[in-house]
Image 1 (cartoon, rainbow, N blue to C red):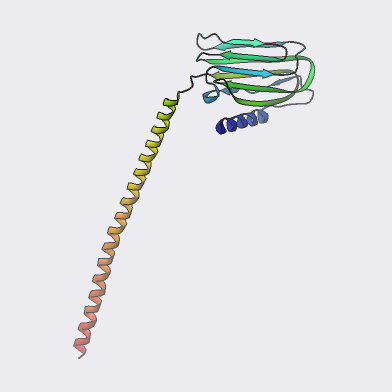
Image 2: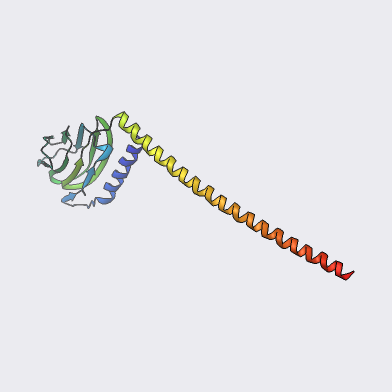
Length: 203
């Protein structure tokens, strides 16, 4: 759930930063909201709530495949539900007789679990949102464990390769150190030999 909360907060921040809310604005168009991955497991449910739209609600969707989701709309909420794998685009507008100061709430249920919930504050007579949703089947426990195991094995292989490289480097440095020691001993020995020979000649 920690990752889902982080994604929820990140998505909320992006939406808040992207929406341009102008006082006395007649229309606010919220940038495209994309939902996929762990936030779009089946069964999937998207819920958007808002102030009662006295001039009506306009909403429709398109699916890439032949799936038949359910789109329910009312004057205070819309709900999109599906149990099929597909890619959907949903368009939604709430229309008012005058500019309204309100907060829309977007709630996402993935695999029957609430995974995202964030507010969209606006001031407008018309609010439009577009969603791009890519649903998928939630992996079972065995698949998730296999992926985790595979990831751990790959990580261990990487650690082993790095250790081998480090050991090889250490061996190379050890060989170089041995060669240096031999050279130093030879130089010291030669200098000592020359010093003794000069002393003997001085006698």
